Length: 256
Image 1 (cartoon, rainbow, N blue to C red):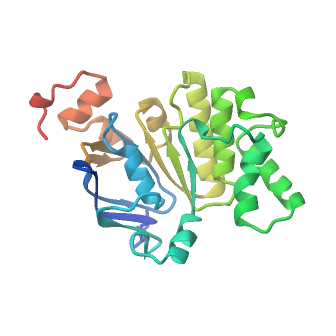
Image 2: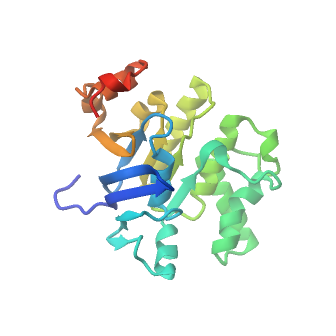
């Protein structure tokens, strides 16, 4: 990144607990414009909770999320809504509305958040489907699609409002290696053609290596490693090494 470039997203001292259970224990992280950051970690590490803080679906107990220089955690409701429109989010397994067709799912945010007429909505839906390499599926329902196709429809819905930032929540869970490779190519294509910043959370290192500019390891609510792919592969951290090698980790033998 160019010297002096301001972060697209700055996370400062982020903490979150549910009841007496701490989930995020103080996260500091900068995500630069146009960057693809991949956050990895085991189940229960706090990845999804972190992602929901970026878009304002959750508010922290302590700390701040700053988007384009504006503090989302302190913003007035109208300002917070404007900031959230900068984001497009692809939820786990697509999270499509089962009662709506593919067209209806992608058109939903356009109808809700814009004053586009039906012709313009239809044109935008087609554009989004073309970008994710899906054609002639507008009249089908989610139950009629494969798992990989549902994820791609979820991507199309996420980009419908032309966001600056794309968030991907476990985009390859349950997919075979071929579909995982397709999803990786699509994420990179959307980044390149839409010129967006991307944040992906995953436990799938096959995906992570393909789409990451930098990787962060989240463990027990803290970031314990942050580096580019080459640096991450050679991390001296014993937990990171064990995670990458698929080893069973004895917590008493790994320094916290």
